[in-house]
Image 1 (cartoon, rainbow, N blue to C red):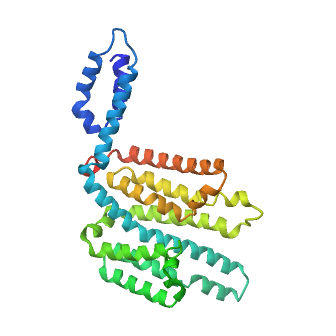
Image 2 (cartoon, helix red, strand yellow):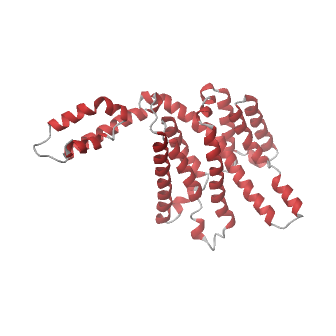
Image 3 (cartoon, helix red, strand yellow):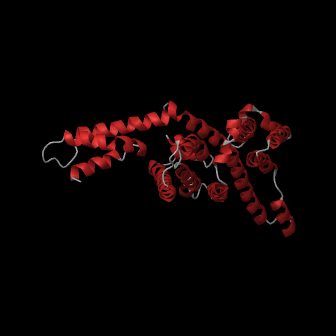
Amino acid sequence: MSPLEARYRRLLACYPRDHRARHEEEMISVLLAGARQGQVRPDPADVADLLRGALRVHGRRAFGPVSAPAWRDGLALAVALWPFLMLTGALALRLLQAAETLNNGHGTAWERLTWTLLPTEPVVVAALPVLALLLRRRWIAVLGAVVFVLYHIGHPRLLSLDTLLVPNHGPVLLAQVAAVVIAFVPAGHRAITLIPWRAFLLWGPLALAGLTASKAIVRWVDVTVDLDIVRWKPLPWLVVVALAAGYACRSAVGRRAALLLFVPAAALGDLGDLPFVPTSTALAQLGCAALAFAVAAALAWRRNGPVASATDR
């Protein structure tokens, strides 16, 4: 193989695998036939044309009619994962409250331990839609919606539409809606089956640890004294979200679900504060997230290889 042919083949690696299997030899023949005598490097015009063609092929597969089933499943999967994020947020807040209860010194040690172990209403409200999805029981989804309404009746201030739109309450409402939709819509009901149990066992504790760490920075660090530390509060959760997105990107459905869910999921860890921190800090945090994403994607690809299916277009 000549150096010119080797370089052209490296460029053709930008095309999808099955596209190369069908057209690579033909494309190489045309490129080599048009090369100059003694040429060892691809012509810049050919490089631009190959890269432009690769983008067109990927674009048609990512957003064309052939990708509609993958987008539909990706949307259903993103909706199905939202209640899990809400439960993670409720549990993270509860862990921090429990730690504060154990350390505040009020009451006896037994009383503090009892207060710590007792489940709180928000955790129960967030857990019911998750149970509905895991157990695939419609009645639990309906029960979760009823409990959500009763919880808000007991807290009248939460019934305001303006309040429901704030981060602590609006997303929980969306979780209840998501659970009901998935329970009663067959396409959505199947979405949760796309995630193996081992993935829940891996990413559940990791997500809880990352979000708890991000929230702990806000609650336990003196903002006026340690502002530089507080500015890094989104990082633990942002890295976990980026790792999960990289892990999911091995499949077409996972890529689309990650794309749809990344920003709202990252926002749970105060990602919205990034525009108000120094540019260097924001770029460093986003760089850490990008590195985590790249590492997770590379490891998932190396371990499992590409998925060859119709939904991977």
